[in-house]
Length: 212
Image: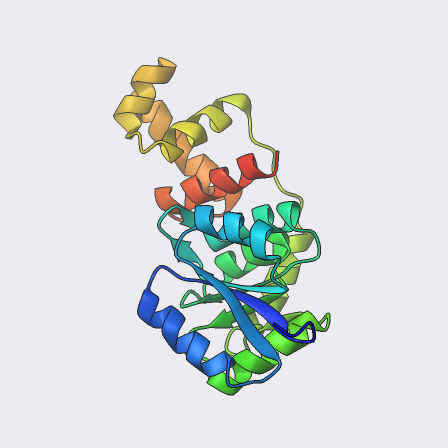
């Protein structure tokens, strides 16, 4: 492999998607796909072994999410560039990705030439946000300037149990609380961390633990 080529690691749990992206980006003589992965665990292993320049990372994977993956990749492979390629355009997800240090955020309906350009631009040191979601940047900036409310010990315990898939009734039994108290606490926690459902809350807590 030529040293002048940009080494790219493709991460998506659908082989057809990986094949399609690979066939598009390898038309550029400066880009070489050095590996493929379908889950985060395999991504970390390949990133350490292959030392790619850029990782094209799906947001939703069988063993985690792209934001968590970005945080871990940046810690185990300093200097690596991470582009999230996803169907999710929600501003909260974009915000979490920006906080995690992503170098690019693209939607999967992007044209092939734009993916190639994004890879070369990010490799060159630029940050890229898909133009279809760039209108959310102001909201992202505003959220970034807000003071985040710290979580109380009991709230952290509840989040841990939510991440384990426990119901409110089960959480109440574990923490010796009434189910109503747990329900009220869950609502307060979701508002505090700016999520709308238990899945997003679990993803948030997973990222918080990965930063420790």
